[in-house]
Amino acid sequence: MGAQPATVQTHDQPAAKAQLASDSIDGVTANAAQLTAAGDLADAREKFGVLSEAIDAYMTNLHLTPPEGVRVAFCPMVMKPWMQHDGTLRNPYYGRYHWTTIVGKEGLAALTADMLDEGSGGRSAIEMHEAIARIGAQFDTDIGADAALATMTTLARFADRGLALLADMIARPDLTESDFERVRQLRLHRLTQLRDVPSAVADRTFVQLLYGPHPYGHAPMGTEAALASLRVDDVRSFHAQAIRPDQATLVAAGDCDHAHIERIAADAFAGWERAGSAAADEYGEPGLNRTKPTQPARLYVVPRAGAPQSELRIGHVAVARSTSDYHALVAANMVFVQFVPNVERVTTSEVTRVAATHLDPSRLTTLVVGDLDAIAGDLPRLGLGEPIILSAETF
Image (tube, rainbow, N blue to C red; front, side, top):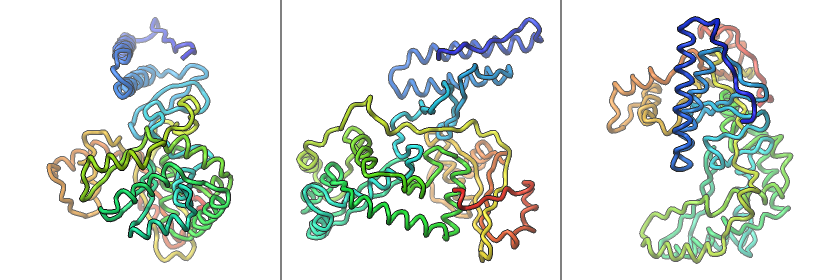
């Protein structure tokens, strides 16, 4: 990385510590060799994670600090660390796959998706919706923390026309200044309204406490400050660089023939090409400014005077979705909320095992949104010490 490696003086250490240093550095060396032999990017990322864990263990065991100018970061999705020079953090485990956030522009992806049907393919917004209505179709968009989904539901006999309209909205939206200002203002009004919805306040605050500035740390809708700072050129740039054919997947379901859908899709999306070059990409690198989650369990309270009910959130950053225990953990979550799941091949013993393996009570974050005077007497029973009082305006 260009910085001087950490050094260990072993002449004054006990023999056990010297042996630990030798074992640890052997593990680092072996994993580094495996990384250089990686066959593709996915394999390299997996081996890089193992190597990073080996380096982290080596430095932790010997109580070493990173070299000057180097910082240690942690990815909560794959639960692995990495080291890099100071500056904007570049998550090596996800790279350009995680496209929904830019620090300071939270909500840009959702705003862009919301503008797709505001005129495209030579039609105004009204003309586009009239064309959709004429074939009895319905267009929707859904933005999550990991992906964007655009759907067109139509009769099978209108599949070609529906797909053509979908392609116009995805690949050729107008993205005009006037539409941008109107859609952005509507979203700002909605965020203002959500301040008075306790469940929304709880959800928004809880993910911020867990993930900080990472993409998972805010709702896809973004923040008021970020939306207010956005300009139409931000939307145009995001659409050109992030919504592109090499990152898109088309799924067709219904009474349709594969060859027919493939042909009409080729016609509908003809001419849709990626704008710019890979080197010009601004979007997709999640700024993960988070260290390994080792802080003790904490209790946070967002006071809401006179609230008739309280919202409670409790949890910690969990395992990566790629873990072999993922489906058993989903079943465990259902069991914990007293819902009996119909999940095949997941037994009660598995649920008990994964809960014991992956749930760490020592670092649970607990959030309560409610009337502080009404709940003050109950908070000490949680055994989490003095609550940290937050303001909903903070998030």
